[in-house]
Length: 243
Image 1 (tube, rainbow, N blue to C red):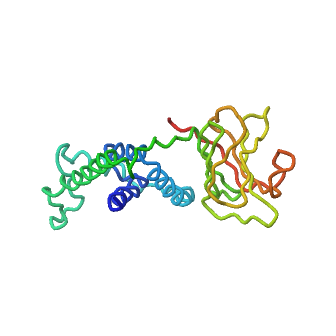
Image 2 (cartoon, one colour; image 1 turned 90 degrees about the horizontal axis):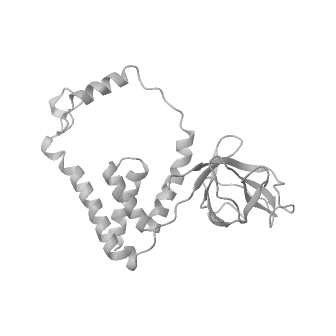
Image 3 (cartoon, one colour; image 1 turned 90 degrees about the vertical axis):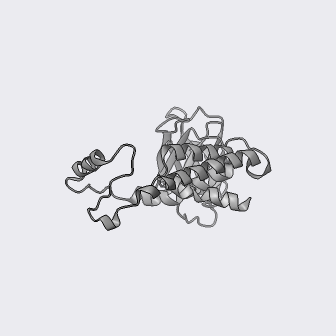
């Protein structure tokens, strides 16, 4: 069973990097829906890559790239192997081997799905992990990502930190959201340090796209006023998720 799980989690890198075909992606997402542990593993991978993704600068494509790409597509047979980019026949792929590798990959993923569903991923089929209604990436004043908040819209949320935050003795991190200007900021929870945690906030309206989330440095136990009083560590606007 451990070998099976290792094989399945090995696909996670390709999923996060966007290297799967649409069919492979659909199968892998079915695996994640049936296995919360696998979904959590994928979420951790995304968190690890998020700072790199956010800090990467956009690069302009070289001149003529689009025209060359269109020419390659036009020369590529619809039902055959892609044409080699080089005119050197010594580097041309062997056509007989090209179709088999994707089929082996897809067959392995499909087999993993069937076996996983049959075995229940550890003995008993688990319910699919709930999907957040909104996700907010919290950035500091330098534009660096510090934390991610996933709000599930049922008075619960998850916070994960993507970089270390120094919390002096006698202080804590407090998470907030602003459902509306009329309601004002509402606390989602207090943390003694930068650790992943579940947040159980008050009864609030369903989270909305572009809703503000932030974390502040407050006295141990949380803000004495019920409103943010300390410096803002990071903040960000939520993005609604397709669910």
